[in-house]
Length: 129
Image 1: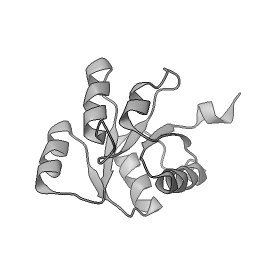
Image 2: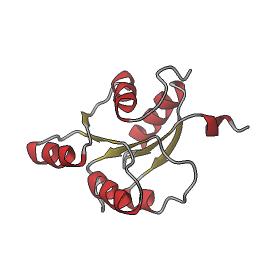
Image 3: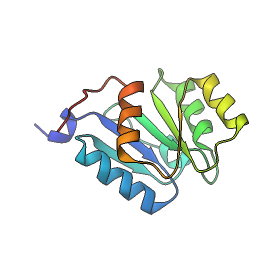
Image 4: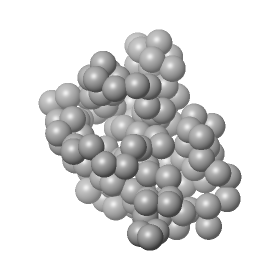
């Protein structure tokens, strides 16, 4: 059996390649399978496959924002646990995220903080390694 199918899938969306690579590396080390996308539009075009355990979405993306992409996905599918990441958290964003039931993490991220947030919002085992 493919090991990636037995690991919870985390989908990371960020327009910064360095952020995508670092989060992919950190989450892989923690035992997650990871898919990355550079935009909200790319995420919305994702073909159905393994259902993500959690989405990690940068809020500031070219085109569709992270929260906008999440809303579109949720309109099409059942609730998907998600976390917004941003360098610019403000009161409006915090209010919008709260109305969607989505926590916000501020960049730069510590991998331990991200993993703890994923475990808090998604049903994933606490020790995958």
